Length: 510
Ligand code: BGC
Image 1 (cartoon, rainbow, N blue to C red):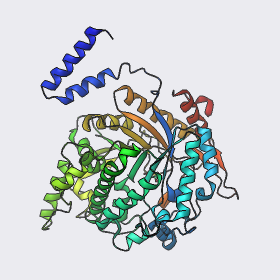
Image 2: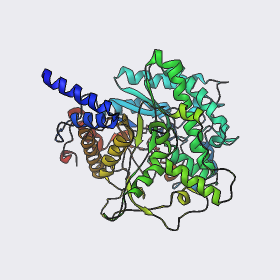
Image 3: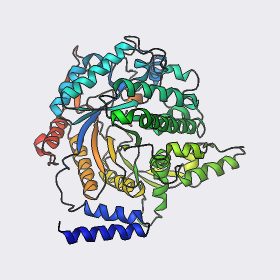
Image 4: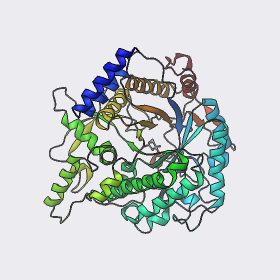
């Protein structure tokens, strides 16, 4: 780049800044980092990984002084709620078979492994009164072995498995959970933070709050829609931000890691091209935006529409306060900016329209959001009835994040496809290929995406669906004594992408 070029660039930036138009600078920078939409390779520093979660793979549910989580209690007392009446008592036995997981991780040649720590395994009373040394040894072993093999650990602190101990006094509806989580996070940073540099506080708050405390579809089976689920989201947000601030104040200086949160979101389209587009924005605010906006948006508060709707509905319902607890200045300051990256779980998309009259009970998230969803007949469906292959949605949500959250760094922490568990899993290869292409397109379009993590390393316990829907790149032989992990064709395909950093047709792997 010649000197005159530099002078021109400086002038341009100064002009933009002098007009106080930061967006203008961002726009310009975006245009510069998308030199060619035909860039076929992922950038050198882009990281590929796979993800799992403790309850879904570890087993050993009551070993070495582990205390139960709400999922242990729920699956034991309500086996009829799980499609095949199974539970995570043994699952993939990763607590005893991490070596086998490691073989798979090495075969895949992933750059990082996203796994979660079981809170009630390390802290059986949920507080720090008892620190379970055997559990600490286990996670130390996992982290050390990963690092020895040049695989970076990315740790989720909480993936649905609330300690039963906390449920005794309201779980995520009691704001004491903020203190509990903060001290759990403190313990994790102190114990593992010398080696773990990427932390995810919570996995998908919406997806455990609404089914757990709204419609009672998941444990702890509280049925209080529009109230308890909102409290859960709110306490999760505050707990996340408190842990983030703690890390910055106490650990960042010596550990230099990053802390973020993982939020799930679909992208939305209007069924007819001429329909107003603001419904798309509304749907995103009611999913991703609910927790992402307070952290990554400009206001340091919930999305404006969400605040407005819920406050006015609460008044109409005759309540003396809004069911959505307001964030005061004190909390706004703590929450705003409390993320070094945004973890995004993207699986699928939907068409969306306003629902008039509103669907769902009064009160409820369905009622407050006034949205109705549909799918396109041409979208291919996975084994899971909610999962349709819509790669364009991934590209579009990434662009939406770029434009609405100041191009914050995004880690795609989950993306995956379910089937019956077949080894010749062409459906998964197709899903993987098209979604990776969407990620690459987004990068070429200036989106700040730096990590992609496929769900999942191995077939595992799929919550209410038990073992009937398989998401693994590796087949798990559930009936054999050794519970072998067997590479599916998609594992070979993913490895070829990681090695070449290019998306091949996948024809060799079908
Ligand atoms: C969850 C995983 C789950 C996957 C597939 C994600 O929302 O984080 O635990 O297995 O979806 O349903």
